Every structure is written in C-alpha cells, then in structure tokens.
Length: 75
Image (cartoon, one colour):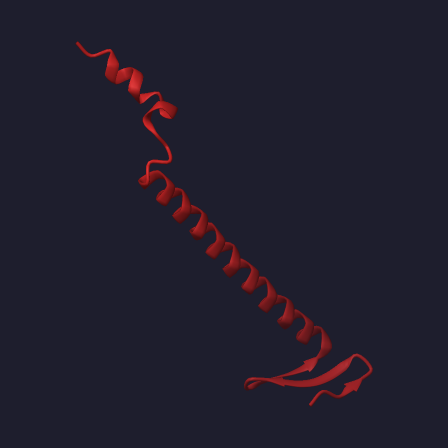
C-alpha cells in the first residue's frame, strides 16, 4: 500500500521499508541499471559467441588474413 504524504511515501519492498520517495526512486533506478548492465553482458556474450561460430564455420577464410600468400612462397 502506498500513501503519499507530500514527498514522503511509505512503501515496503521485501523486508526493508522505504520511507522516502527519493529512496524509492533511487532503488528503482538502481534495479533498472542492474538490469541494463546484465543485458549488456548477455549481448556481448552473444556477439562473441556469434563471431566464434562464424570463425569455426570458415566464414573467415585464409585469404582475408593473407595467410595463403605465405604458404605459396614455400619451396
């Protein structure tokens, strides 16, 4: 139950009661930033996984890295 008294609010989240609206907004923003950080980590892992899969499937062939030219110069 939320009761607004001016800028004061009485909100209980979990076991910790939040008595000030500023604390509540801070808590919500912290949770949002944690969620965004977690999503950023997941997206980076997916990007690295996609690049590794592309490399393993031969998407990057030797000609792009110039490795074939070094092989052809052998005697």
